[in-house]
Image (cartoon, rainbow, N blue to C red; front, side, top):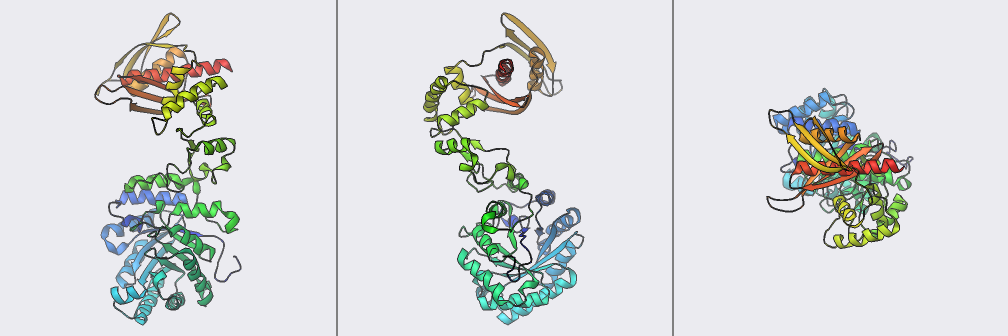
Length: 513
C-alpha cells in the first residue's frame, strides 16, 4: 500500500479521545487530577495524539486541557472546537503551551445536519468550514478538520469539502462515522473514493472516527486503514457516547497480530501498557469492563474448555493468537470447571505444589468432578481441600498449637505463636505492621523459612455472623510459588494455618530436591 496516492507512510497514528469523547458518557466525568492521571498514562502508552477536551465548553475543561498541554510530554495535545471563532481561539489558547499543539475543528456536512440542525445551505457550510480551518491555521500549525456525520453525507459533496479544507490548510482530515451507521465494505469504499477523487488528498493525513452503534466501530476503522487511512481516533475500553467509540486496544492489537494481512502497517503504541491503562480508566470512570471484552476483559486470556486447556498446555498458540505479556498480563489462566480435563487439573496441582502420581490424580479428579458439578468454578482452596481430604502428599513438619495476638489503634501489633514439631512445642513472639504481619514474622523465627507473600485473600466459607473464614496465601520461595489454605472462625488463626500450610510445602519440596 506504500505506493498508493495520498498515503504518507505505513505508520497508523493513534488519536486517543478518551478524555473528550469518552468522558462525555453520563457518570464517567473526571476531575482535573484524574484527567492528568489518565493523560500521563496515555503518554506512557505512546499514543500519537491526546484529545484532552473541549476547551470552550466550560472553565474546568479549559483548565484541564491547558494543564495537560503544559505538563504532558510526548503526544500531541489536542483541543476540540466547533467551526466557531470563539471555540477556535479558546482551543488554540488552551493548547498553546503544548510540546506539540494540535487543534481539531468540525461542522456537520450530512443533509440532516446541514438542513435540520444548522439550517443552512451546503455552500454556507462549505464556507464556514474553510473559514474555520483558515483561522485555526493562523493560530496552530497542526489542524484537523472533521465533516461530522461524513458517512451520511453525499459522497460528492464530501469530496468537495475535503478538497476545500485541505486547500485552506488542514493537515489532517477526519472522516467520522458519527452515529455508527456505516458497514465495512461501504466505509472502505468511501475512504478509497476520497483518495481517488480529491486531487490534493496527499497533502493531508486521513483519519477516521467511528462509533459502535451497530457494533462495527473496530472493523470499520481497520477497513479504513486497509483502504488508505493513516490515523484512528479511538478510546481506551471503547468508552464514549451511546454505544461507545472505536476500541483503542482492539485496533492496535489487530494491526500488531495480523501483520500477515496488513504487511508493513504498524502503530507506535507501547502495547504492554494496554491492560494497565484499561484498568485505570475503568476505575476512574467507574465503568466495568465486560469479562468477554476483547484484549482487556478478564476472560480474554482465560481457558475453561477441557479441549482448549489441553491444547493450551501443550502449545499456547493452539488457542491463543496473542501473548498475554504483550498487552501487560503476566500469564494466561486456566479456569477449572466441570469441563476441565485431567491435564488441566494436574497442571494446577503442580502450581499449588502437589506432585501426584497417576493413581492419585485419578482419585483427585473423581472428587474434583463432584465438586465442579456443584460450583461454576473450582478454586485453589477447593483443590487444597480435595487433596487434604483425599490424598496425603505433604507431611506436616510443623503443626499449629496456639496463638496470642495483641493489637489496637495505639499499640504496636505483636503476636506470640506456638508450633509443634514432633512432640516439642516451639514458640516465638514478634511485632509487625499488623497482627498478621507480626504472626508471620514469629513463624519465620520458629521455622527459619523465609518467604515472600505475593497474594493474600479472605473469604467466608459459610454465611451468617458465625461464618467460617478461609484464608488463601500464595508465597514465593526460591522462584517457586506455593499456596497455603487455612480456615477458622478466627481470621487471624486462619491466617496462621494458611501460612503454616505453605511453609510445610516449602520444607517438603526443598528437602525432596
